[in-house]
Amino acid sequence: MYTVYGGELDWWYGAMGCFAYSNELWNSYLMFYDTTNTDQYEFDRLLLFEDSFIPWQKADHPVYGEVEIGGFSRNFGRLHPGFLLESDSHRNAAFCIYNAWVTPKLEVKDVRVKTIGGGLKEVTATVENKQMLPTHSGNNLKYRIDPPDYIYLDGGKVIAGMVVLDKDMGVNREQKKNPQRMEVSNIEGYQHVDLKWIVRDGSKFTVRVESVKGGRSSAESE
Image (tube, rainbow, N blue to C red; front, side):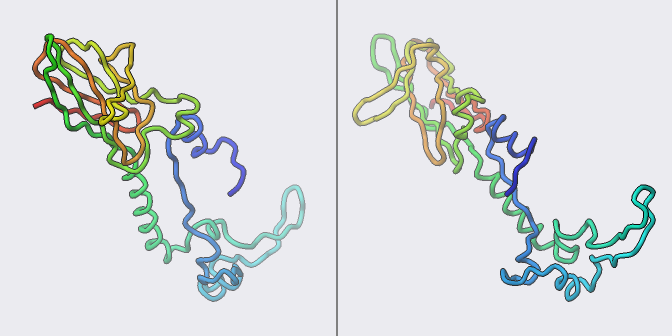
């Protein structure tokens, strides 16, 4: 809309990597619900009964001498007139609540254990983003503002850990360093990540996820 220096919304997105949203309630269209008529004087005269325009009057200024004071009051133009505010405030609140509702929410599910021989077990799990927005914004990823989403396996000694890229074809991406805590850079909205660990010992396993923007979740094997 206009250039802002030190704006809070810019800081939230640029420095914190958050999805920031804002909207203005009042605009000139709402005066007459007509894009061709945005006359503030007519609106004040017909609907506000000249309540917002203060007639010009002369006054003595200590520096500039005789001046005129008047015009539209400071409460006019940026927000609704009081009697029109309640309806649009409610609509705006509903809009903001919906925006908050679609922020990322992670859920761990389908934790399964399979014995593969040699004293080893295969533990698989799925971490799903139940909402529309991803766990990291583009700016967040570009500047590495937040750490990746961490997915932990508790129970037994982890020998190997990997992200499953294709279950049918058996394509995996192994994480060589610290496989007990898998690192996933981002989980898109309405998408999921499949994981697999090879472990020694243990009979009960817990998979948990920790994400700065996506929250925390955990699930146990049956």
